[in-house]
Every structure is written in structure tokens, then in C-alpha cells.
Image (cartoon, rainbow, N blue to C red; front, side, top):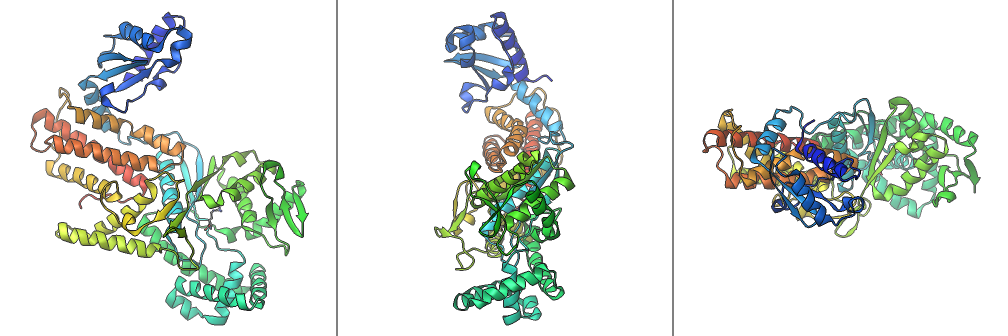
Length: 565
Ligand code: ARG
């Protein structure tokens, strides 16, 4: 394929070979300088210094002499220090714009064709309210799923609901003592949370309640009909509330197989572990020792024979491999669970499954509120419902003030309010710990989601007013801010791949911000609708392409497109 990078690379390779040096993959060495003063592309010559036995500035100067004039799309070449800087002609950018605007799925790729990726994300523990602590996994996981889809993978979004474990014994006891089907129906998760809190308080005074809870869980595990029905109702109530949040976020799952799904599948895995000589009985519990890997043991069965979180995860991984034959299985949780994943990935490896290397944990930093750990029990949480509610109300108020004639006020306020929260959750590197601050979460100014949505709406509005007036622009000679915008647009496919390689949504979020800044600079410096001839045609095409790419960024981040604000 002819690209300027390849053309430069070929000439540089010829030069190197003529000097008896090896030359491979020169195109990948070409960098885009941070400052346009240093050209549009730059070749660092330090790498060749040893083979050519020559100082880098000397090599740059010789190279300049050898290839100057041989590249039709290059305006001038400068040797600066150890760098060779290339300044491209305007026609290069005009051609680039024509090329990327003609690509229907610009930015997408087929790198994942034929490969399936499982994404285990969100996965709340049922009977608990959705709070800001769940925002990270839901927003990051949703974005990663979109990225994998965009790169041609087949994706399976899995909500590994926390719907099994001893806490359900406690909840059933509490329910039978202090609640009823009517109350749960009326108050939803709030009722379940309240009786759970009451159980904890009363069990501190009266330990026999804990024995009752253990007995209740054992009954649930033996699939007692009445207990299963109660547990099922807890699950339904919880899911009904979670679905509202998922709808608002535009997040969808292909499977809701939670922990309970693996109930009847764990025995076989425990047997397998035993047969493979991995299980050791330690103080009554069955464990897999991981001392050789500097990790505490993975507990597979408790003293009383009950299974644990890890037992269910090991079973789930094997089930998913058998069912989906995944290329990768990605888990998005807070970094607090890193040890759990490292332990159980190791157990799967020790079982002899070479695909254990395809299990990937994507951790993110923990969130605190008012500088303190999130804790539902003490009330130090921000519920997602409240957060979204506030954000949407704020957006509604602003719309009412600034554009009360807007057609879909409620829909737009929802898009902007939720967009602000989602963008805020994705903008910073995922591993950074964060402290929740209301004003920051609700900020619509500066580098925020609403700023991106607003810029997107600006491109949409210009195109609406242009009435499809495009036309030829092949002889147009672009201004600096126009070339800068095109250059940025051209890097979109690289950004998508980089975000995927590191499982880092912030690459896309930050790119969207850069794009908005570049577009707004262009918008302020160049007339668009009032321009004429080729300039107008070119600027409209540039606007359309910026809209296309910004729109894709919003889609990938899981934010709604706002055609009008
Ligand atoms: N339910 C867990 C929690 O709320 C997250 C589950 C993550 N997925 C998994 N396969 N372990 O912390």
C-alpha cells in the first residue's frame, strides 16, 4: 500500500543498504512530532549510528541530501540534531481527507476476525444497591466490549452476578423474621438492604443467628423449594433495578450466568483438582498451595465443605472455555481483587490448561468518598440512581436556560447527564485511585463528556445547515489548523488499537478531547458555511469526517450521540 510513511521508509532503506547497513521496518520508526514546528513526520537517526559508525546528526544530514526531492508529497526535509523532519505538502492532507472520508468504517478493523472474547464485567452482588463503586467496572467493561466489537472480534458480555454464597443464608433468615413478599415487592432492594443491616446488628449480640444463617444456606444449597423461591425473588427484584441502570448506560449483556449457575458444575472440578494432585487438606479446608508462586493458598472448599468465590470462578473459566472457545477471557474488577485473580489463574494453569494465559484481569483503582473507603454498611456510598438523577436534573436545567425550544429535552438531558458521569469514569488512566467529589462528577465544563457531546452537536448543526452542499476540493490548499485536524483524524485507527492493546478506555477519551480542541480551533479560525467554492467544500468535508470520528468515539465510550443540544 502506498503511504507517505512507506515511501519515506523505502528511500531510507535504499540509503542504508547502499552504505552496507541493515534496514528493516523503517516505517514503524517514523514518529509524529508533538510540535508541528518540527514537521509532520520525524525519523530519529540514533538507531543507525552503530551500523554506520557515524554520529546521528551526521546521518540525518546525509540522508537529507540523499532523498531530498524524491518524495512528491514532501514539501521540505530538515535535518535537526539526530532527527530528520519531514514537512508534507497541502495536497497530502487533501488526499488523506478524501481517503478517510470515503472509508465507511474508518477506524474499525478485522484484526479480531474469527476470535471470540468473553468480557466479564459489572457483575454486582444481588440484593445490594448499585453504587459509584460499580461504575468503573460497568463503564470500562462496556467500552472494552465496544472496542473488541469494533476490531472485528466476536464478543460475549457476561454479567457474573454475585448470586450465591453464605450471605444468602443470612438474608433468608432476616427475611423470614422481619420481612415479607409484599414488603420486598413494595420497597425493592432497599428492603433487602435494610433487613441485611438489621441481621448484622442483631447477630453481633446473638451469635445463634449466624448458626441459623449457615443452616439456611445449607438448605438453599440442597435446593429446598421454598428457599430457592425466596432466593429467586431476591434475584428478580435486584435485576429489575439493575436493568434500569444498564438501560440508561446503554450496556448490554449476552449472559447473566452468575455464580449460582456453577452450583452443579463445581463437584466435577473439585474432583479434577483432587485427581490432579493439587488439593491439600489444611485444617479441614481443601486448598491449593501456591507458596512456589509467592501467593497464599487458594481455598477451594471450606471446613464445612462449602464452596467459595474462587471455586466458582475456576469452574466458570473452564465452562466458558468449553462453551465459547474464547481467544481471551477478560475480567474487569477493582484492583482490590487482583490477588484473587492471580491465584485462580495460577490454579487453572496448574490444572494443565495452557489457555490459562488467555485469562486477563483488567483492574482499576479503588474509589473513595470523602477520602474514606466506600461502605454500604456505614452509608458511605453514593448510589448510582442518585448520581444519575442529579446529573440529569442539572443538564435539564441548563437546557431550559439556554435552549428551551430543543425538541427532545428529556432525552438530551439524559444523554448529557449520564455522558458526564461515564466520561468522568473513563477519562483518567484506569488504575489511578479516585476520590468521588460531587462538583467534579457534575462538572460540564473543561475536559468533560458534555464538552465532547457539545462539539459533536456543533458539527451536526453545521452539516444540517449546509444542506448536503459538498463539492470538489481537490485543488484546495489547507491552512495549518486544517492540516493539524486531518493529521489527528488519521491517527484514529491507531488509537483504537492502542486502547485495545492496553485495555485502556482513556486513550479514546483523551483522543476525543484532543479532537474537540482541534476542531474548535479550526471552527473559530475558519469560516465554514460562509466560505466559498473549494474552501467551503473542503471545510464541510472536514466537519463531516470530524463528526464521523467523534461520533464513533462517543459510541465506543458508551455515550449517547447528541445531534442537537
Ligand atoms: N461480584 C463481584 C463483586 O461485586 C465481582 C465479580 C467479578 N467477576 C468474577 N468472575 N469474579 O465484587
